[in-house]
Picture 1: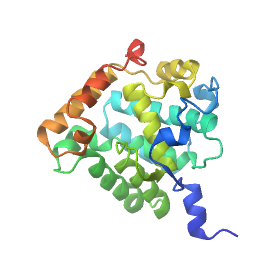
Picture 2: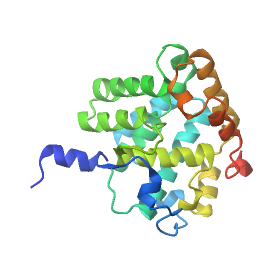
Picture 3: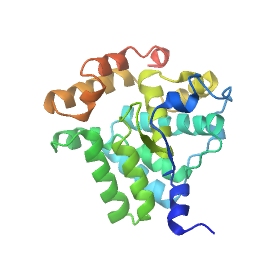
Picture 4: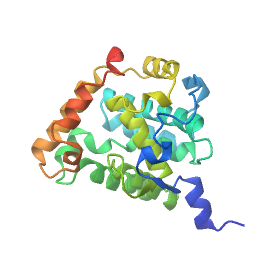
Amino acid sequence: MASSKESAILEHGFTAVPRDINKILSGALKLHDPQPLLTKDLPFPSSPLVEEVQKYAKANLNEQTYNHSMRVYYYGQAILRTQFPAWHCSPETYALACLLHDIGTAPHNLAGTLLSFEFHGGILALDLLATHLDAPRPQAEAVVEAIIRHQDLGTTGTITTLGQILQLATVLDNLGDHAEMVSRATVEDVVATWPRRGWSRCFAATLRREMEGKPWAHTTALGEDEFPDGVLANKVMEPYD
């Protein structure tokens, strides 16, 4: 019988996988042909905890960032189902991570700390989930770990399954990377449901704003010009912006 720690690791996506997606894919672009999954095929969790976090996210994020957070949920679920069906992570835990992963970019949060936005976002998420909403501690910590590391792209070490799926879904939406993992039908349905409304310009401006105000920010690790320029050059999502 699995211990409570082992059960929590499995339930909340703490299982370690390589941080380098190329190692996971063994150099391929995808492991399986993606299925044309639509939003109706990927139900969004409706628990009281998720509903409270949705209210919080809507109250603190602009429309473009909130819609991005929802797209990340659906892209991530599609990737999980079609590419990594053996991986496990509670849809509720993943939804919480998606809703809160960019909470640190809200203007009042970005300007209210010297911390990089992912780290501040993780602190805010832990306070919200564990202190105010009484989420199980392992679930809250899984969300925080994924938020802090969602821009921690690299080729060494490991990351949680939750963190890897969150990374894959965010770089798909932000940069157009790993588009081969998701059906075009899925992308078209998701952006129709949760429109981008100029997301590439919005997010690139946010990145530059943080790096100008915090030249030490973790975002600089992805390239002070390369990252925002890459966001603006997202050809996969350009037709929908």
